[in-house]
Figure 1: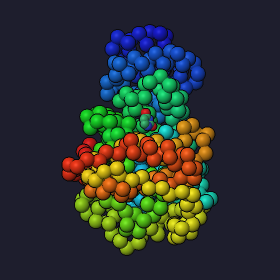
Figure 2: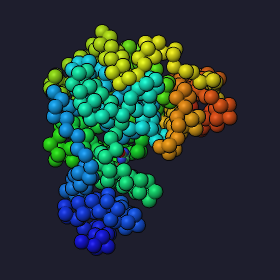
Figure 3: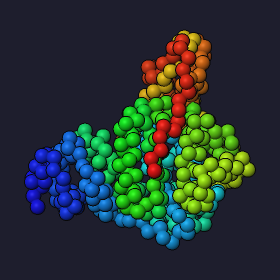
Figure 4: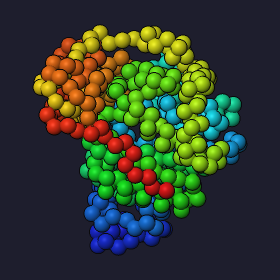
Length: 434
Ligand code: URA
């Protein structure tokens, strides 16, 4: 099989066979196919796409390129949740402990933040001592013992994706549905759970900027999950403005703690309850989504969800006293308001720019080697649809450096739209694909 012929075939819009797709993925993973040929193939896929059978083969070949976790020794239906990325997205921190406290086994592999989006493992490291790199044995035994474990992705999980993603990133081939489907679903299938709930974000701060493209991606991933015999659903959620009020590591952790104690922002809780009720239904603990949601609300109200969070942080070596007393989190040196320049209603708080502003304060990383400043970030004082008076704070910048704070304030101003016309609050749940 010659790579030249396979590039030519895809360039002409023909479908690659299963054997050809495995040959390509294996060859590239083992450095037998050079970057320049793989780049050409990626660009051909970008323009010609892949049919459903090709997508399935691509996903399976990528899944099979490394280890596949065997979670069969965990009791019950094991469930994973995955977000395609967002700004202020602390959903896992809230959702995981709530449903674990109801008895749903949460075996979650999480990533680190890159670019304008944050990562759950980084946020959990706000608790001194937290171990986000569990061995497979620790991971399995913790889920069996306390129903929840969150760990970073093991090095040999879908290694084909690591190489391919790095190449896509520098060849302008990230935003193609077949390639995103293969990338996300290969990792989800290698992670070995029985059920997957996908949070497909839509809007300014998301990969998918329009409902149409997000729906296409959601359908593609759900289709592949079903072909692989998984229980799977995707919820399309709004990411035009940041989720909740907090953006930045410690600030988001504090917001998550408050949410687990019953004081969560409405939009965050809406996403948490929607995804969580789907996960509970998959777990078969409750078959009715409304009743599942009621179970979650009860777990927050009676304190069981927060207790589970403390247990989970402690079990992974983290200092849970920070969750009991949020004043222990180191604050940023400066807290500076970003003031509204006129009276009116907030029409836009563009999520991507808020994410980039937090990153420019030191709260994110451009490369995986960068060190994150945990204390910086942004607290929104207004959400889209809120009324605002001239001079009132739209948001507060938490910074450790005055020049960086100034820059972030300018970015936030450029991402904020206020107008005299009334405006509705954003609808959070856009669609569900099952
Ligand atoms: N997230 C992934 O893991 N892969 C993609 O291709 C896009 C988002």
